[in-house]
Length: 253
Image 1 (cartoon, rainbow, N blue to C red):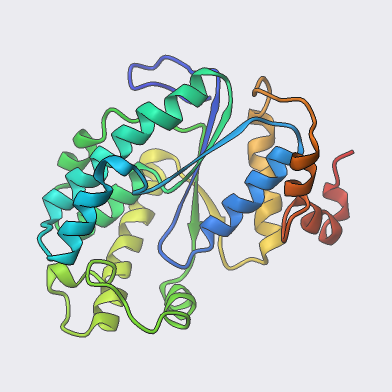
Image 2: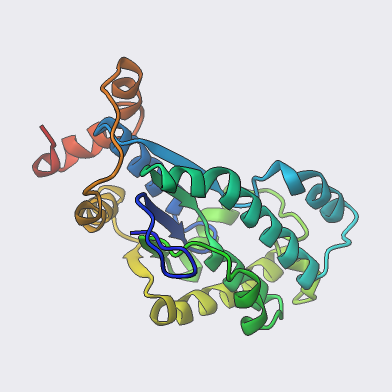
């Protein structure tokens, strides 16, 4: 179950995914979301750096390259706090399932990679809810870089970690920056009990593991009445129905 910082349990479930860029975590979360909806669960979704509260400030700061590692961290913390109050907590208090694409561990990885104190950034995010299960999709740096750089002709300044002066070449800087983040994620596995998924496995196998791991946690989660739109969504693209065809033993009646 999800828990408040003071240890009180919330009726809803919070499942989050983490990993360096190119780990495939967002794909797996989308597959899980469609499957859960298809099973009749009430599902809410929250995404890193998506709060309208800080959107304009973040855009301006990035455009003018004004953001320091500390100010970047605080802006993301404000984003997290706003989404927690407006999206995540209301859904958890109602008993729903919340899926989060990136959570506080993204800050712990990226901010520390930028030179921010690990203790400081953990205190900044001390308001966060403890997730029910935190998945870390681990992928080798080389494979991650192939996935990302193969489809991006250019890299943005902060995305490449150019703000911390690792290299004048954006691609080399990106590789060095992601390597630092990967090191931080690996440290967090033991510290926070992250559930590691081998992101080099075929997509259906990864999804099967995710479903198996959250299955025991679903008891008591809020469900809603069946509807036509839910059935359509559950069958969309590479959704639950796709995985059931590949892994027929996973088919749910």
